[in-house]
Image 1 (spheres, rainbow, N blue to C red):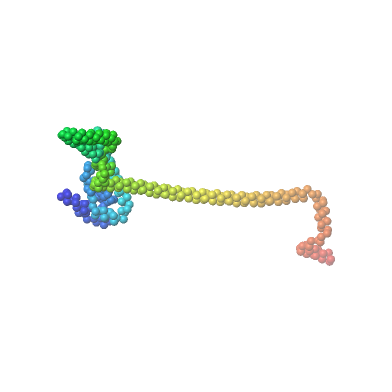
Image 2 (image 1 turned 90 degrees about the horizontal axis):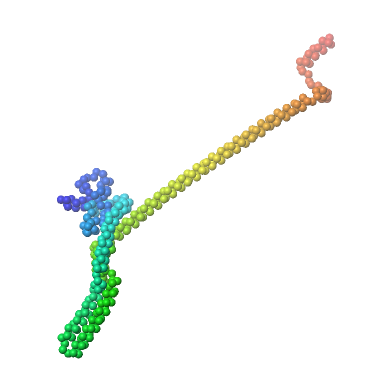
Length: 346
């Protein structure tokens, strides 16, 4: 039952038996915690098709549903969410690779220790060791035949050939033994997947065709892509933050500029107001000084008149009066005079 339930969830997604009243929510089932976000983003390292169930790794217990992946891909926020899910999956990939690297280190240590325990003669490559063994066998065969041969001439010839082969074998063996001291181990550990294999022509290419190598190569390449995505996203966020700070600084500078311009305008208006008040004050003071000067001049004139002799003034007035016509008489005065004159006439 549990297996069947898990299979249905893998196919149909979480809460398959519940009816979603909200249609928008029904299209976002992939956001449920039970759905594997690494799978939605493109690759889960612990999927059964990858490392799940292999070596010491457990299979991912979350839902890997193609239906949920299709729903995710058709969601309007898929590009943004994909980057988010990719970055969030980095620790899982780093864990898988770190375990593999630890295995590589252990296997490489074992290979080196075993190689160091071998004698130099045992390090001679298989092909060369077979050639040396063949020469030894030929030398031994000639010696065996020579011992059984009755003819002294044949016996000497065979013994001579056996000796020559023996010398050749000893020289070749000494040469190859000296070379073998610098030979690397024949067994190799793959730095990609941690699997060991015997070195030799074509062995490495043969190893690269194995499934475990392909899986780890995919996971390592995926981790590089994830880290690059994380770096690009960090640079993007940094650039956006710098642009916001720059815009904020420009706005602040613009406000400061406007504030300075307003302040300068106010100072200018204030200076012009002071100048206008100063001009008005000067004009007032000038008018006041002019009035005072007029009053002073009038006062000086009066003082001059008062300081003049009265007799001379009267004489001058009399002189002026003599040269002028007498002023017209008033009407009342002329009437009284007429009346008075008539009485005198009578």
